Image 1 (cartoon, rainbow, N blue to C red):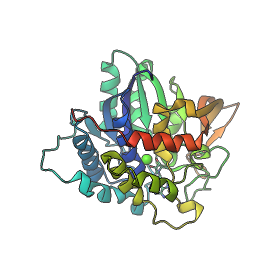
Image 2: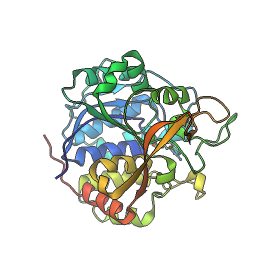
Image 3: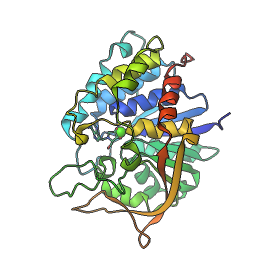
Image 4: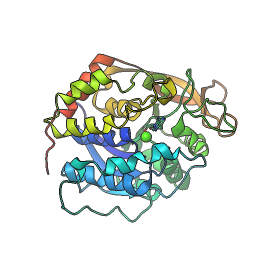
Length: 317
Ligand code: AGV
Ligand code: CA
């Protein structure tokens, strides 16, 4: 059915980042070559630990995990970053004494570079946090761009407001770009295909209770149970648009399994590196470079796809 995808996954330990990992492990056509954890919307230690525990649960402790050492200039709110501690403490991730592997010794930007260099065929890279690691890898070795099949990034906001509220900022940026706006600006200079999932499309997928109730009815499947526990952590937020939790990363990840549910468009885009719009993504025929942008998703079908994905039996290897 779907073509095999050789994938590197760089995430930043948020609730939907770890649900994205569950999704990838449930996709039989995805061959996950390695995982990088970026210390952005998380604390690195519990986010790495939760990542390793999910791999253990799914019988995939063979997949190498690296930790990011690069940090952006605009830190995520601590209130969001602490979610990693809650994820790492979930009972389903802690019901065994089976040993956890260690993360690899290389920092994440070197790890990504090594994996690209060693790959026989180009790799797809899924990024659900900031892009600092990939940019550093390509800055150091621009020819590695030839080994990049495609970059799927949850990031940006074009014709909608951003989600950053901060001093010295006008609110036009999305957080994954804002954390390290210089890295995003530099990534745009590299000769790689980019497919963005900006807030324009993710605003269509708030985490909603009817979906969570449907998922709950599937909780006899371990993945559905765990995804439901993770999402339950996100519903206690102030019901104001700014505070709603969306399926930002999970929508992006879902594209790998159900691309037919999406439409995309190609536009010349540019990243503003400096204040007061640092991290803003804009369409600019002058300064822009061609960028593919996910535009629409067939919503009921996407939710059904997620329900089916989480109703798979994970193959314990
Ligand atoms: O801007 C969306 C990105 C996604 O990669 N993250 C969360 C997702 O993992 C930052 C973010 C924006 N609003 C948030 C975020 C919120 N209310 N809680 C936690 N993180
Ligand atoms: Ca994220």
